[in-house]
Amino acid sequence: MSLNAAKPTFDGQPTAYRRRRRGRIDRLGFFGAFLRNGRSLTGLVIFVVFLLVALLAPLIAPDNPTATIFPMSLPPGGAHLLGTTNTGQDIFSQFLFGARTTMTVGFGAGILATLLGLLIGIAAGYRGGWVDSILTFLMNLFLVLPGLALLIVIESYVKNSTPYMNGLIIGLTGWAWGARVFRAQTMSLAHRDFVAAAKMSGKTSLQIMFTEIAPNMMSIIAANVIYATLGAILAESGLAFLGFENVSSISWGTMLYWASQNGALLTGAWWWFVPPGVGIGLVGLSLVLMNFAIDGITNPRLNARRRRRRRVHQQATRA
Image (cartoon, rainbow, N blue to C red; front, side, top):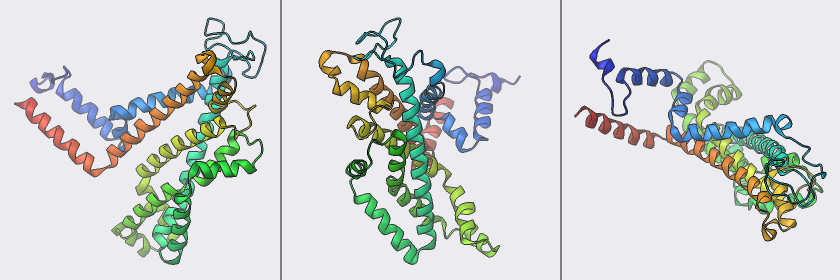
């Protein structure tokens, strides 16, 4: 073994080992940079934990979340980890099934909004002309409309909507911000050499948009999915809390609705409204951390600043 391979660095790890590990991660490209970022990794771990909770809710939940067979208003204890409601429902079971509903609605609405924004944004940015004028007008129209007010107006005409219906409405009305970003990025990519080469090879406009331009926006697409999912979770929870959802459904928003309607805050039943609030906060935190990390990875200015700090650190350690 050479002396350089055994030489410890400032954190006690051999230099050669650190280089090999960084090389393995760098070969993964964007995903490797995502895993190397501390904030993104923390957010990913939190999100995966809640995703597993949502997927395994029927196996983990000890009771039926709608069953009213337990003593009322019990505080957290051995038999009921998060206590019971004033109607005798197990809050821990409601929390687990609520995670499934809220995560499904948020992720589904986020993907739907991103797909709509991608289709409209790429078409507007690449085609230009009257197509761009019409689609840009639609984007601006949805952007200037207040989102929550628009959702409340739509919900007032949809009686007893389910969480999944709310997610569909949120996805169909929340695409405009992403579309503007995709349009701007498409306009900057449409005049690159690889697009000109694709035109000369005989590819159609549709093929160029979705086989040449879209793959070069994967980091922006991932960031938009995360941002749209966060917005959808907050919007669905807010609508449910305000009562614009079938209150017999189980979600974190409806848990907050029933806690508010039954005066849990006034009676000191904190175990009723704190778990769904913490769940929404942690899932939102995980998405924000991943979104910040993706921005840091894909932003050229932040990358240049990070490289300068790394060079200064390496010079200091060598000295």
